Image (cartoon, rainbow, N blue to C red; front, side, top):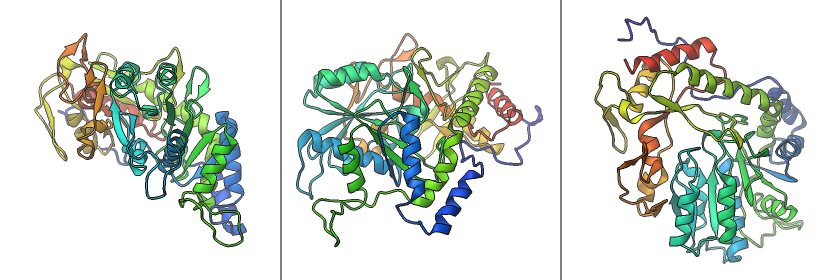
Length: 427
């Protein structure tokens, strides 16, 4: 089929998302080397904290080794504020349930487990693929004692934050905002990374701004910033010798990595514009196909379009089954599925990815509760209501969706070929 259309594999691989470097990064890395500030202090760190806080619109930013370490600090801080400081051999969330986004990368909620909390997964809504406020309300009915909610903005698209905030305020719950994927996105004119009680962004190697690694805790609270800064440097007390009075972590950002981020930051808006153009080219190029792009609330938010994703309509989905490690599908004329499209892209030297597998489907969390708008989602119905699944929306999106090549170094001509390859899968 593809030979008849004249397709050939790309000579140079088309990636999902890779770092886009500009040159200034090397300048600041070299400064760190030449001045011998190679550890976790230095001008690059200071400047990156200042620049990010200014862009985001918060008072304090604490540069950390990874986004995950930022989430760990945020969740530990939230746990201590809610439940008091516990002996060091206990986690800050010892014995407590925490409501978490279901469709996300595991880093969003792993720190809940680090602090001995128990994640309870909240179903996804269809308008942004983020936490469903109706499912969250139902979760509070089932577990009224919960006081912490961890939300993520999937693929750079802000969730329904005001609705979630209203529900949390009514139940006395705090919010940890995982904005790892959404740096530069806005919700009702506010930057993500300022919408929770504790907020985190990431500079991982595939993010829209990268340091190869790195993350940041964001806050308006001087006390919180100082606490995270102390914890992340092994909780060293202000003494000449190594004095430790509470548990600490080696989580501070390297001044070398901060140099990469410092060189990247002036290009954030440029990267967002490039990612948006990729999204819009896919949207226009798929017209007439039985597919939809990953949705967002255009009235209230502006994503950073980190990854462009698509979802296949029910009637155009061929039969597909996924095990824990492998997937199979049955080809059918006029239909396709994520497995077929991803395999085909790979055959032509282009990288796509499955949608994040919902956390409640992960073997490691098979015993954790999962809440939909109807109640417990364990064993939820496969029925459909008005074209959408009756509960367990995350599983529906996972089964029907995939992430498309979204690298902002992909040329329009290369993307046109990717579009034609996808279209041919429905031939």
